[in-house]
Length: 226
Length: 402
Ligand SMILES: Nc1ncnc2c1ncn2[C@@H]1O[C@H](COP(=O)(O)OP(=O)(O)OP(=O)(O)O)[C@@H](O)[C@H]1O
Ligand SMILES: [Mg+2]
Image (cartoon, rainbow over all chains, first blue to last red; front, side):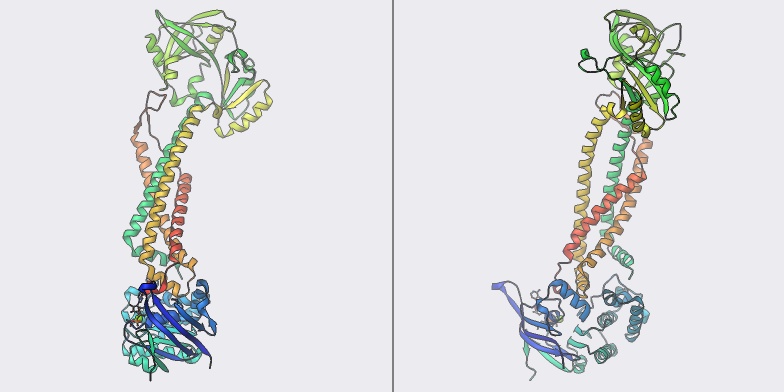
């Protein structure tokens, strides 16, 4: 089985030498292609920080990070940008929709960034909108949606380009049971059809139980589940 | 993706920011347009004065007088009649006016004053000056009566002599051979243009009168008036080639006041323009930086999704472009309204140096000029937003999102 992602002694510290605050200590784990991995842990334990590093939107202070076998911790900012654009789907803890874009445009945007043809975009977005129960919302702006609807748009935006790695920070936080199920269902389909791997930070037992494996973070340390 | 629509939504999201930006650009543009409109109309009227007093082209004799320290003799152009006739068939030429300069003393009874006189074509001379030389109390027909020689006096010179229309005056002068000569003329009327040098010291007689007085048929210059001033350079070249023994000057070579005022105004206006553009630049930089700070989470999201930095700037620049085009339209309308109102109100300017009277402010309104100035301002706004947007790309994504 191929390794999608592998972390080797990753640590993250904020602040300067004498006033340093270490929020991740010596984290090592790997994620296989097609695997669902849950990260759980209390608030402030470093879940978002870890996911940001895995999603290439933050830098580790020490340690190595390999994505599909490539040492991505060495990449410069434009290479990281290209890598995020092509290979990573990010579901943010707070939906982070673009306020001036409609639901449709928010979801279509990652495809456009990857120069997908307009006809293909139209087809894919329509399909995903239906699957997420958002078709009647497609021309609305984010402020016109409920929190749960926004979160679903955020999930759709991360999944639309069928990325190899999806990093999801509390994807079910503002979703009811039915929509959380639908979201997980979509992730599973993506996983089974395209072999996408999922790294999900969550407190939600529904999500955690759905995953193949879980890791627990406590005060920045990875705790052995045993 | 409809980027202009997205930009428009972003603009409308932040009303106060947009209104302040719009006003800064619009007011800056209005100031530039009204200021430069005033400047251009001043240049125009100074050009017009020079062209009307001197003619578009001036023909003088090319032999300098050694006694006058290299400057030209007062009555040295002898073949002027031939030159004048040769120009009659040229469609570009409206009028060819001879002018003979002479000096002396004018007196009425026991009052006398030094004068600078011109012998002119009596029928045509006063048609070319237009509003720049006003005549008063003119007896009709003036200067043309064959029985008696007549004179027109600068208004202030007449006051010095205590002369009124119909009075008889004596002109005394010295001919080039050293003989003194005098003649009696009747005061036909007064003229005035607000320049003390002219109003206080000059007079005009018919060319026939001055020729008789000076004992010479020569003139000092021929002033050529054209149908279109744009044709003067071409005609100047061809005349210079075809007529021997003369120098053909253009009005620009005679326009000392125009050149002085222009270089002064150009500098004043240049400084003003730089100040206005700098203020606009700084204000826009500030406003855009603030907008970028407020929208850092959105910028971080775009970047997290893999948007290249230039695409992120492009959104801000598009917004700045939309705002600045709207502001340019507003500024042009404001400038038009203000200029028009000032022109209608006929507000008087104080007398400029060398003049005794003020003149009404006139502000030039020309759409090509408006468009070019607006374009300069839009470019400044785009540069300012580019500068601020560059900083947006250096944002720390993780921090901006949390
Ligand atoms: N920029 C920063 N400077 C200093 N400390 C920070 C910074 N960002 C995060 N932290 C700290 O890092 C720790 C981990 O934060 P993180 O957001 O990863 O927690 P989390 O597990 O995602 O929590 P939650 O479940 O509430 O989202 C926290 O103690 C937080 O205070
Ligand atoms: Mg978190």
